[in-house]
Image (cartoon, rainbow, N blue to C red; front, top):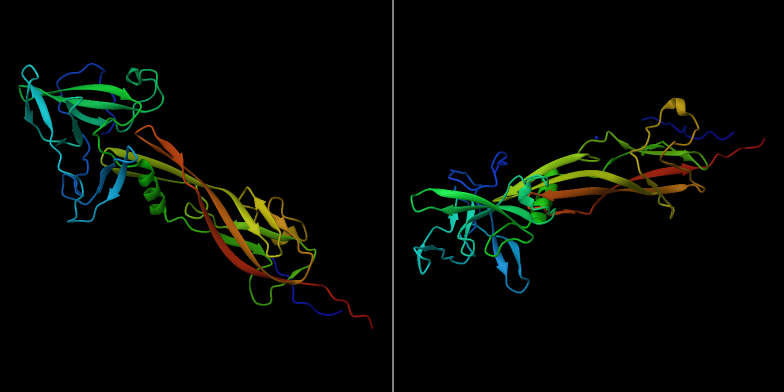
Length: 311
């Protein structure tokens, strides 16, 4: 009997919760917004400009010293409304909207849909409107809008979601397999091959969560692997919806219960394990979406045949 190498198998605006619908004198602190690439503390941030051809606000990263936000003039109607006076366009994170005659900002975090200020809607967003008073006070009211009020600068929440995903530093899985990818380790034709995610963690398999904020917009993401596609190098593949089961010596010649394969021909095969991530994001603006992501790891495996010498 020809002696083969042994097949060795072994083994992731803070919610104004009590704010009533009725307006009243207040001293609300609104989150900062971004103007000309800088926030109110002078730190770099994401400035936003309007694309006149698209009719929607678009996020633009502005390098320090290269502002692109156009000069904005804001005016408040006084007296009987026939006269106006200039006012600051930005007040503690809220943008002055001439049509509304107040500083407007989306609620952050958003109000629950059971709150009457949603007016029965589940889309759009509820905005806070802070109006200036003649006696140096201001009053606060709320309104719902399906679209972002004209003149309100904002950051595209999908951009923030992508930034939050990048900050997680998601990586391909560590491939657990038998036979192992080591010198002298050989699998056999027709014998079970076991595949699994070795030592899964939030960065390689999830679940993982993160948040990102810019001015008035806050986005939360939740990420986890939905499936792993194992391309076996012989033109065939196996899709595993779980992390797989790590092989133990006691498993002997059994097939993997949830993620396995067997080869029909000898050879050296390059295996690719591609994870498909399920990444969902939600923003305090009422918007939500998903971000596609796949990550791939590779390794090789040697498959031999049992040969018998007849004397």
